[in-house]
Image (cartoon, rainbow, N blue to C red; front, side, top):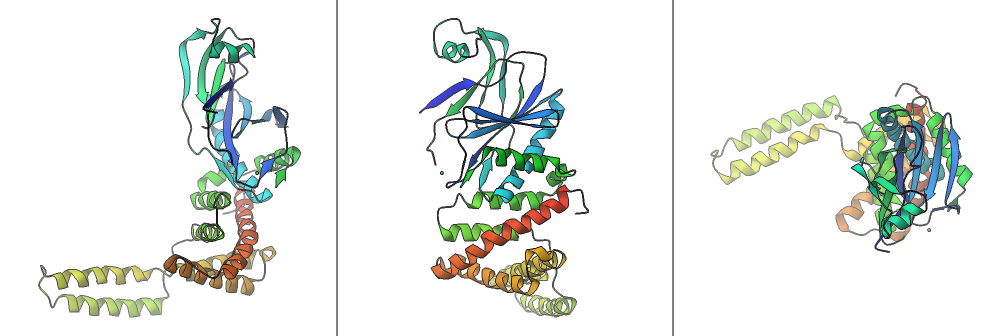
Length: 346
């Protein structure tokens, strides 16, 4: 298929707006078969799921204004992060709002041709515009819009439709779900987790999951006693540099060393990772034994360094670490998500 066109809106009734949200699932996951579309209500709005040629799409609404519909897009993005954690699947979705083309005057489709074939299925004699199927956007559902989908290679855990809607409704019911948008580190971490299943090898999935944990980390400084020693070392390096002329290669080389020494004020990533996650686990016993988790993370980060520096690592150990991360990381992220989305203090 080079491209496909379909009816992309209701095309009748009063002015109203719908948030349109396309997504794809990682290889090895699929939604249970649906006959064209399926829907579920959430409050006064409706969640409508469609399966297109190469992707799925959720329409959420209707809303009375563009502003309200736009706000719902962030809620949907957060809901799909929850879906990824809750159902254990990789999800990729549009992170930008696409363009909607609306004609100055409607285009007639009475003449035979491709537009007439598509519009004819809805009984339209004209169309008001079109949009791309793979971009999120706010759709004026009262307009007669066609939707264009480009061809691509298809990439298949079956998720039941009711389970799918139940998970989205659960996420959208969290009182503070909009707060997730205010936590860029958490959003990034869940997006990294959601896409790790798209990786083709165990090594790549392992690195993606470690990176997921790293993306959560705050800046941490070394202990005061170490900082005192570092200050002394910096003074020695600086004194050595001053023995050379400023325009000499020696002065420049030692200057670079001085810059590197200065960065040692920050705690190492491995230590920060263990301390940060240990602190979270200490407050949430359901995540496991604090001592055991810290030990596992020490081994995980050691394997990560070997793999990145040497390009290879023991396959058996990587599989063991990957199994731990695939079970631990989504539970950790779900705990942090709930803490934010249930309107607790973050």
